Length: 296
Ligand code: GUN
Image 1 (tube, helix red, strand yellow):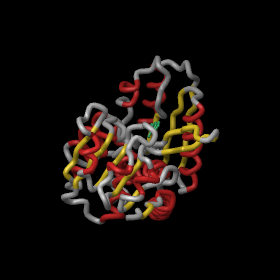
Image 2 (image 1 turned 135 degrees about the horizontal axis):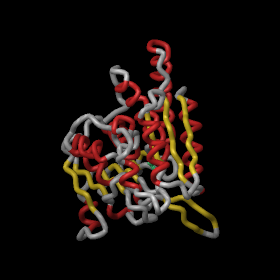
Image 3 (image 1 turned 30 degrees about the vertical axis):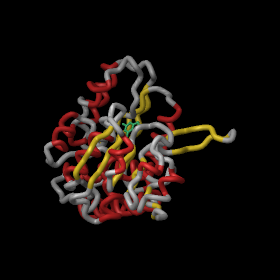
Image 4 (image 1 turned 90 degrees about the horizontal axis):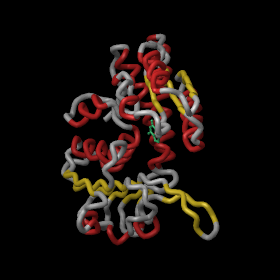
């Protein structure tokens, strides 16, 4: 079988266009412009690139973007004071604190100081609990993007066997909750899983989110399975820098029914879902109906 390529870049552009339409409607009908505040502490080069890209796309869909760049040695007190100000600013519907934070800052404390209704990353402990109990929450952007692609490809996911490789709070655990919410039979596999190849071979859906370049070979993939590759790993091959996923794309594409490429798969969906979450937060904050198809 030669896999259908799931084009995340094109899908993300479609999601952003939907968000832009809804934002225009919010402005026209209610005079509301959603706002996203992004907080960056320090000068991590990769984080700077992400933050710039988030700001640019926020403006492109017609929302207001507020960037707060703080020195690497900013105190916890000052960062918490900024978050408190943003929590109380009605122009700000979404707050994202770019991770990782410098070592002297307590990441859990900082994340849990964000108003859960503005926590567009879905990392606040209240949102984690709401998702885990099937209640309305803010859903982490990367797993939400994966879910949207799976729903788009399959329609219903009900009864499918899904294996999530990786148990991070940002991707693995919320991904498993979302798949369970869509009535999949879910296995979370990780570095201590016994006989990982056999576990993966059972799966109709494989979501790989471990951060290890090409660790899933094609012969672990069941014929016709759908493979969602969350990994973005920089490697050097033949003297060139290259981006590869957690799945060995060439061999997996020979067995899978559908597969996301790296780059151009899950990656672009993450920012699209951040914008979707900001729109959702703005609708909820104003007592308006949520945008259809852009939430879990
Ligand atoms: N750093 C890398 N990915 C993310 C993300 O999704 N959210 C935040 N806040 N920081 C990140």
